[in-house]
Each structure stands twice: as C-alpha cells, then as structure tokens.
Image (tube, rainbow, N blue to C red; front, side, top):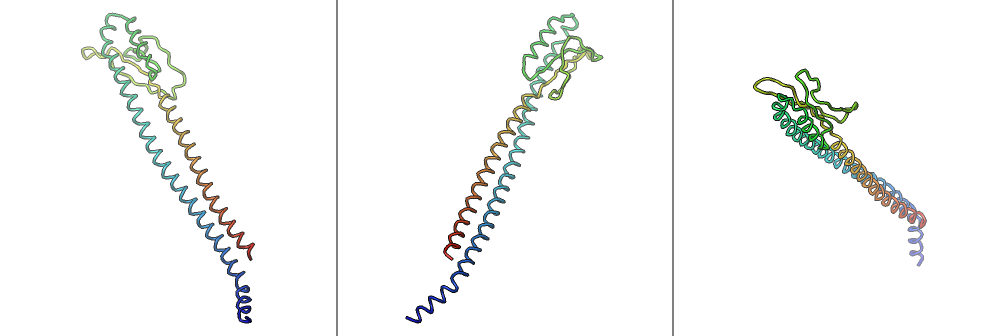
Length: 202
C-alpha cells in the first residue's frame, strides 16, 4: 500500500509538467496548422485569380475581335455601295445607309468622308472617345479614291461586361477568403479550448 501511494505521489509530481507540455504542444501545433491552412488558402486564391485573369483577358480579346469583324462587314459594305451614290449625288441614300449602320448599338457613329477627310455627310461624334475605336474604309472607283467610310466603334458593352465580371470575381474571392478565415479561426478556437481544458486539469 505504501508503495502505491509513493507511486501516486510520484505521478502527481510529474503529471502537471507533462500536461503543461501537452498544452504548449497543442498551442504550437495549432499555430502551425493555422498558418498552413491560411497560406494554402491564399495560394489557392492567387492561382484561381491568375487563371480567371487570363481567361478574362482572352475573353476580352475575342469580344474585340468579334466587334472589329462586325465593323468590317458594315464598313466595307458601305464603301462598296458608295461610288454609285456619290457619282449620282444621292446624299439621301448615303444618309440612309449611314443611319442604318448606327442602328447597331456597337456603332457609335458613321459617316462618309471626302478624300481630304472632310465630312461628306453630317454626323455627330462624342467629345469623349475613351471607349471608341475609329476605323476607316476607302471608297474606290476605277482606281480613284472618292473618299472613305468612317465608323466609330463603341467598346462600352465589352468594357461593361469586363467590369461586371471583375465585380463577380471580387465577390467570389472575398467569399472564399471569408470561408477560409472562418475555417482557420475554428481550428485555432478548438485547439485553444483543448489547451484551456488541460490547464484547468493541472
């Protein structure tokens, strides 16, 4: 019996340091896990952001290419049909083609120009051409340049779509960060509770 109490006394003597060591180990382990999970989440977000940025850039290029292709169809058609109308001074028909071109929401303005680039038909161009790309198409008849067709191509819709996409990506990234932070905070809280229980036992 005396031996049992001596062993119990010895165990009670070494138990607190052991439990304290376990508590410290738990805290260190939780800190390591917390940093690991946080770094992993941040890396995943960076990789996803890079992939999304690349995809968005490619999408923008494709949208602009499609915009240019559409403008080329309109501009070349106007230039091809213009010689007969110019030679017959049919400015009414020229104006009709011009108005028809601007019915397309991506065409901000259209005009027929003289060889010296002065307007052959009236048109209004905005003062701010930030989201405007101008393209000209020569009007040629029997190797003689009669003028050109001017198109103001609006990139507003493309830029708006990119901006909306940026906002959606930003919202998704914020949500992922929030969820990741919640997960790491939960890990830390559980470990702190475990360490506190060990300390209470001591």
